[in-house]
Image (cartoon, rainbow over all chains, first blue to last red; front, side):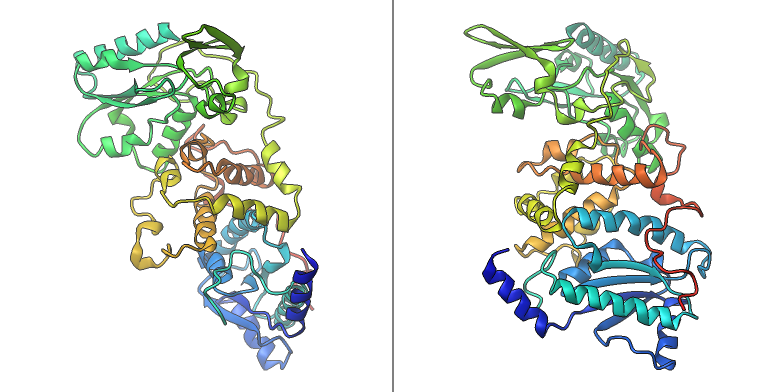
Amino acid sequence: MSLENKQISSENTSNFKPLIVAFCCNWCSYAGADLAGTSRLNYPANVKIIKVPCSCRVNPNFVLRAFQRGADGVVIAGCHPGDCHYTSGNYYTRRRFTLMKNLLEYVGLEPERFKVDWISAGEGNKFAAVMNEALEQVHKLGPNRKLRDARWKR
Amino acid sequence: MEKIANKVRETARLALANGEVNKILGWKKGDFWYDSYPAFITEEEGTASLIWDSFCVANLSKYLIEQLKEDIKVGVFLKGCDARAFNQLLKDNRVDRDKVVIYGLPCPGMIDPEKVKKAGLAKGLLDVQKSEDEVVFITKEGEQKFSAREFAYDKCLTCQYPNPVVYDELLAEEVERNNTTEYFYQDVEEIEKMSPDERFAYWVEQFSKCIRCNACRNVCPACSCEKCIFDNSKANVAGKAKVDSEEQFFHIVRAYHVAGRCVDCGECSRVCPVGIPLAKLNRKIIKDITEFYGEHNAGVNPSLDAPLETFKLEDIDPFETRAKGGK
């Protein structure tokens, strides 16, 4: 990275508001987000939650599309393995996104930008912690330019 | 190889003559020395044009999907990697085993015309002959001998299945190829060693060459959906804009779509008109699957579940960073 680029990116990070897209499963993680809200826990407003019936509903296309259209980080949150409402959905999620995460890293995405975590309906604290951590890491990295379509401005 | 080629022609002729099959899928010679392209033969006389040489690399198994739409019986010549592809199609319910007669051809490894061209040997080339591990280039001026490994396809250098894993009749004796698995992931590891930015720069450079011809998808025996999301203009999956992200999107999804079903035939890299090393994406996924879920050679045993179709309770969990409870 040239000096000029470095200056630009440091300027960007100072007033950079990251956008995190969080795919939350209806039964656990979305309820976890609710609990974080009703417990008045702080978690960043830059996290945009998309509710999905189950974490295994998240198609890898969704993740790529989010990065393409402006997300700086993507989080997938589902029930803990063993707790899936549909008994086995999150086991598939685990296999699929273990491979997908590695593939994304292989094509050059920073590993911190894409996260999968298990958050149950009772873990409001964990929900807030995961989102805060994701935001913090993405903030450090700066705006995502990889896999981005430059025409999508926010 | 000429002896086996004779047997190919004879087998095809007999099969058509006694009505065992209605159509034969094999290879035919084109105008150039490297040009061995798929042939579809229904008449007995046509079988004389069939060949078997060091350029019969085209995988014929995927053509079966289209051919079997008619109610006919098809005879097909398959090499080791093609037979794995056939098994994968069988597993995906894309072909009917009862309507296909497979003539297996143990494969001594194919010659990559690109490597010959790169070495500057292509000019005035009349014929290429390959014996065990020697390849002879014949021009007007004379003959030049080289080691066959020098000009073999990359995929052939690491091939573990030169003999067909499924066949009705084997046309030659099984070959033995002493390829070590040591270098199997060499290309992948080279990329893994780079920093994220270097990796991204590398892939951007590769993907930006893409002309979106979809050849990699069309040739792939694992990419056989009746309707592809990239063909569905209403689904808004494939954009038409000339931006890098569209190509990145396509290639990541293409590679991921065949995860656990890729038979590693390397056809995607071969047919790519701009030379994107697509097999390196597939190999990465194969490497990860082997590492996390144990070795799975797609298409070798069609009764096994593909790694992404199944799960185990004790699978590794790279995502669990906190203790359960999260307090």
